[in-house]
Length: 407
Image (cartoon, rainbow, N blue to C red):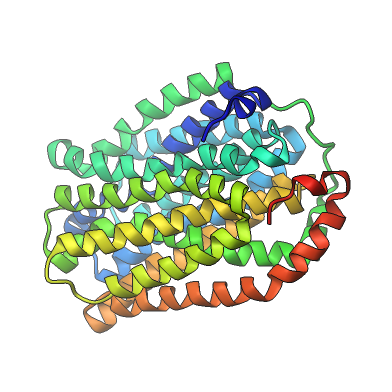
């Protein structure tokens, strides 16, 4: 899959630095989910409050991705990443030192953790600008596989919380972030073909292009499903199947690793078969997996298998969307990454919060999962409606690079 041509085409130290920065940023972005069982027990939270607690960092990260995208185009991705990492480390250190004593303070911490979620809008342009169109899917798939950091949180946070207390886990998270920050400072470099910065008003011009809105909508389902489930599954397995927090974290980590592994595979498949074809299959499989998982299964292992299946489809879809985005918006990739990433986070906020509301209102998570499965089918219908126009107009817009497009 990683050919010699790919290795020669870009800058591998930057690609790997972008992956590590993205990976550990995502680890802390969703850390309230794996810690949610312990936090809810200490603070006496309702299902709806638990849902909002894990959804707030997702929403904050979504909105801040647009800010990060603008900064990427003005000061470059490397400097933007430095500012973001320093902010997150300072916020975590302050929360650990001062303590988190109430629900409102948990939500405030969630807003700060959103800065880590905005790393998406930095890491992807940092990697993307080093690679030509024919390698965009794989390059962005590798960088984007940093969303596996959500699995690290699920894997280690519940056990550490049990041993040292959940508030101390917040402080311990600074240590791996500091290591990733040092590697990023040394090895990451901005690509030499950085486009000149635009006036702020020019960024709004992207929103006048229908294709930007379509990509935003498509990603709100694939990434929204991925990050919404990543944030919620520890609480879900604990509440729905009675699993201990540590076991529920292991189950969540398995789902996240499956989805993260398939992101670069989805990008590579999109490079070979086209992003539209890959996404069409993805939405069908994701809808099927979510719909089946919505029904109470006779064992948590069967539920795990179904949710892993759904997460694998969603992960592949994330890679496919970002195989398409640079082909249509190569010059505006920074702000487009921010916009598309923002709506992906909004989708995750909707899923995470709706699962909590569904549990509180009906006593089960089924309504929330079925509603998101229906959204995947809506996305499929929309994609089928625009694919003919994209295949007709995008090569014309690409000009000399039209031959390299794979739709």
